[in-house]
Length: 404
Ligand code: ADP
Ligand code: MG
Image 1 (cartoon, protein in one colour):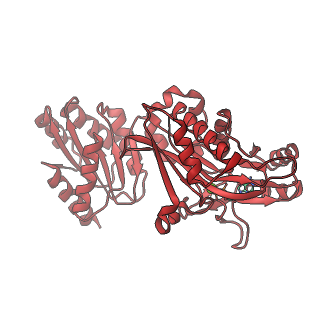
Image 2 (cartoon, protein in one colour; image 1 turned 90 degrees about the vertical axis):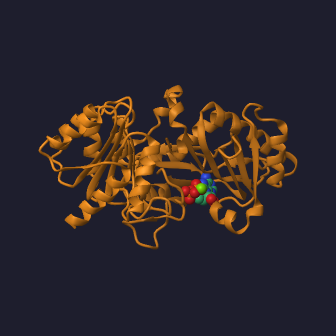
Image 3 (cartoon, protein in one colour; image 1 turned 90 degrees about the horizontal axis):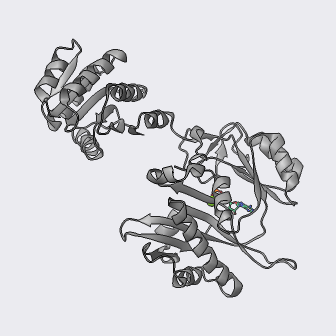
């Protein structure tokens, strides 16, 4: 699960991490009121969408010369003008795809006088079985580009979670960022705070880009501040964090995926033409592979799980068919715990319920498979039975091409 920048910053602040002060706003009036509460005279108005690259993004409804999704404002009036332009409009960034995302929330923050921008992220590193801190002196810009052209400018510090964060990890981070004196100490402290936040909240990814060093002034020494952050959480651990779960913004998620999650279906939309309904993630992947092997592409990944009830199968059919790209459906179910006859009954009931309009190939295997096939055969529906996975993939591709 992902959350918005302002929510992530508020969470990090609880662990002592320095952030630029800011207030979220849902309306122009709220944005103005937010700016009035901040010290000024420099403000930054930031679109809150679950995608990065906002600064360089473009609003669909505004001209090509209009400013992007992160705007520096020099007065409360300018904050108001920007809020009017941004709210309700569609921001397209390199991460949103061409459709873009409607901006429904803004974050009005303190403008920071920046001396230098750094990159800092943390993730679960499957390769080493540890958590990794990835840092670079090249912050603010596209980190993928830095990794591609100057990989030596990226340092990875891995931490064994059983051992926990040790002072040498903090020193390694501060050294990699080439910081000295008080800023070096700040980086060590910040690394520890971020590690604690990451573990305590069961994050699976936390990215700060940029982490900045502010310009020192007469009244204030230079400090390290988080100016932008993205945070995502391990969904399997969310039950431990009702407060974090409450931050979920469904308007940022794919409606079909939200519908699927209501029925405990693991669904991910893809770009192909063949809808797939499978039980078990491994079998679902194999099914997608074999569709490709036969020359077409899967329209989705869908794992109905171990207990595929009629209700679940019906919901799955509806979700698959709601995708206008779907030209045929391949059902591949292994009835281990579930009996094939029960599944067959579910498929028949669901197919009748949704008025199935595209070819349907069903491959069943497992307990009571003969009975299951009999139910499908006697259903009066144009269901094409298949004997094995290879046969099923060939048949659905042939059926779809026959219609086309
Ligand atoms: P995104 O990564 O989605 O484009 P950021 O929040 O990183 O959005 O903003 C882009 C750039 O805008 C930053 O790299 C930074 O230079 C500048 N910026 C962001 N927030 C502030 C701020 N509070 N004060 C000054 N500059 C900012
Ligand atoms: Mg950023």
